[in-house]
Image (tube, rainbow, N blue to C red; front, side, top):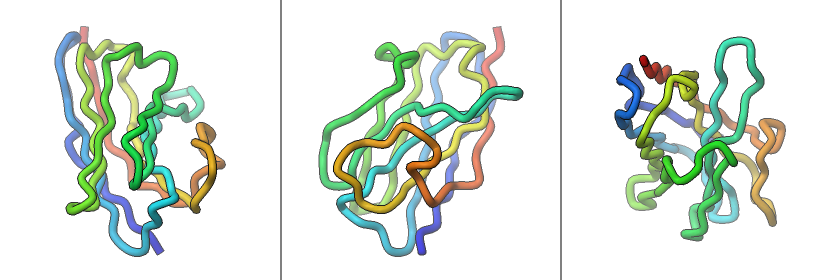
Length: 125
């Protein structure tokens, strides 16, 4: 079983930055992807970014447009999401997620089986 715990959220003004962290404990697999999703009130949960534990290849949702960076520290079993140039539209609850090993990145919530509790990010104009 895998447990995920996010931290680092909060409130920031437009144009500011935040770094989210997700610590994974339990049995993780190198073939699995770690991903960040977000969900704003009244909207569906959407893919933000993802990468494998064993690869430096990064994947992003179209709306990111170079503003966010996903990284990982395997020694700490931690995945990060560095968010820059934040906009009010980025306001949402952010979740980290992982699932069983797969050949290609999944961008749907149903592609992931384990989720963190979520953390609020609020961007004011």
